[in-house]
Image (cartoon, rainbow, N blue to C red; front, side):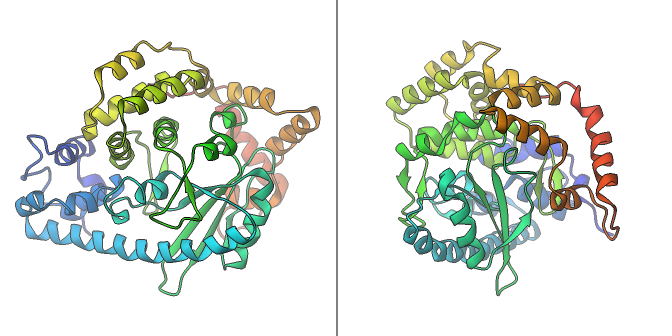
Length: 391
């Protein structure tokens, strides 16, 4: 049996990968644990930077042929996946246009086709698509008509604002589209980035298809900072494995790429919007990480403004509040008594399909009461646990 990814010491390996990404001293070979090439390339792939490093001829000349060859193989796989995914997305665009729907493409796919030299350098597991509330159900029907199927039943209409759709194409490649009607499932945070606000400043995603929109670069930077912060205590799945790390290098490289498009006026807009939304402290943590790990050129004036941010901004308080505190805040932010009652009902008793998918055991057909009981027992310990989110 070959070594697992854990054979490479993450801290030491990540520091070496960071140095390679920044072209800093110490980034040249020899790197850590050269005797485990599979594990080393697996760590690159987790960070989403295999293609970026493979695109650096000076680095590739210094690497052993075995490791360079494996990196190039991963990069070719990303290129094939990208070509297939792009074809699928562009096939969807006319259907959305025919219904008068203007989807906003968020995060990785939007950045791949706007700030990266080639989309292949921005690998991702899905495409996030935001539509207006009124367009959510028509958009679901379009995806289903194009052969997508619901990957995971949402936990309720009020507590959940997204659906994941999946498709396996004729080549056996797996595609996921996360369809959103709000940018955050937490009602207390949903107003930070609304569809109407983002669309008012959106630009056509011409590199992909002019029928798709993307957030403006300033909004995209704010969104990237928040996305990194939200994953400090929330694991992500990469290649079927769960990982917990806020400093995933591709997320930080996104910020570097966006900053490369910024003017002094953009930084001013960024600080003003971050201040208005209570995101200065969150942005400080994310941009400093991008500076230290991915080489972001962070202007001194911007850093000074972020360092002066209050420690208790609203979104930070919410994310530190623990599960019980967040539940109460979401309830308070849910409009109308009927919606509040629905929020409590869906929180306590999610739909049956969701319960079976989230809490059922493979090959075991348990009754719903048993699933609800298991969910309640798991939730009791977490309900009053303090949030572990830090800056």
